Length: 420
Image 1 (cartoon, rainbow, N blue to C red):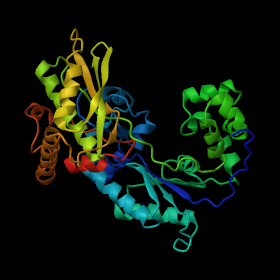
Image 2: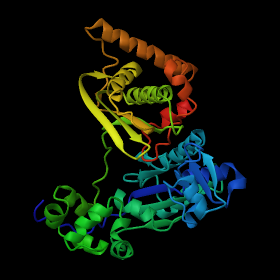
Image 3: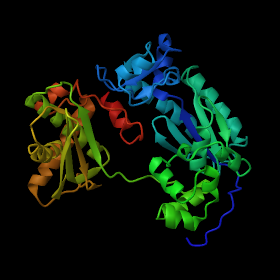
Image 4: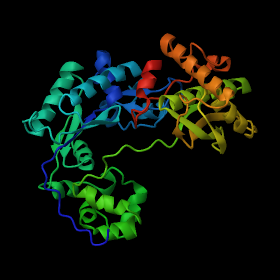
C-alpha cells in the first residue's frame, strides 16, 4: 500500500503465546525420574542411524541439536540417552495444556503439539487480572496438573508474532511482555534471523536493501519492504507485523498430504520396499479421509544410497480417497524408478486436494461401492483398532514404519493417538 504509515500499536497486549520447553524430552523426564537432569534425545525409531527429533536442555547445552544422528550426538554428549517417541504421553500433556488454556478464553489456537495462542480480547470481565499474573498461574497449573518437571515459556504482546518473539526471549521457563514501550529495546537485542520467518534467504534480501538490524527493519518504509525486499504484499505484512498489528490470525490451507520412510535395511529386497510403500499409501489415504479430502495428484520419490533422488508426479482426471486407489496410482509411478542402486528412503504424497465426495451418492455404481467399502473398513478399524482390516502387503511394515510425531501441526495428532 503506497504511502502506508503506521505508528507502533499502543493497544493493551491481549495475545499470549504458550510454549512447552523441550516438550517431548521434558515429558519423558517427567514420566521417568531416572532421566531427569541427564542429556536426553528423543527419536522416532531406535536404530544405529536414529535421528534426534527432540533434545532435553541438558543435551542442548552440550551442543546436541535436532536433526543430528545418534552417533553425532554421542560425540558431543557421551552420556546421551535416546528413547523412542511415545505419542500417548504427549497426547495426555497436550490435552491438559489445551484444557488449561481454554479455561481463560474460548479463542485458543494450537500452533503445534507443544505451543498455542490464547486471545484474551473481550474477556476482561472474566479475566480481571493482568495477563502476566495469568501467565504465572498457567505455569503453576502445568506443574500441578502434569508434574513439577514441566515448564513453559510465555510471551505476551499485541499480536501473535510479537507474542511468539516474547516467548523465545528467556528459555527455559521465562515470561516476557512486548508492547510499544519496550519494542525497540527488545528488537535491539535480536538479530534478523532471530525473528520467526526470517531465515538466511530473507536476511539476504533485507541486507541487499541496506537493512542489517531488527531496528532498521522496524523503521523501513512499507513501500521499500513491498517493492525492493519481498516484492509482494508480504512486505506490507512485515511492516504491520513488526509494529504490533495482527496479520497472522488465519489457518493455512493444506496443500499436500503424505508419508515418507527411511528403509530399515541397507540393501532392501523388492518385497520389503513394496511392503513399506503399501503401508505409506494406506496411512496417507487415512490422513486424506481424516481431513475429509480427496486428491487428484500423486507424487512419489526415492532417495538412493548415493544420495541421488528420483521422483515423479502425475495429476489424474478423477479424484481418489481410498487406500487401494492411492496405492494403485502411486505404484503406477513407482514402477518407473531406476533400480541401479539400493534405495534408502521412499515417500508418497497426494496433492490437488479438494473436499471429499465420500458421503455423496454417485450416478456410477462402482464409485458408490468403493465409497461404501472404504467407509465400512474405516468403521471396523475405528471400533476394533487400526489395521484390523488392512492390505496383506502392509502387514510386515506395521511394526517397522512408525508414525512420526507431527511437530509443526496438530492436524493429524488425534489420528496418530487413535492408532497408538
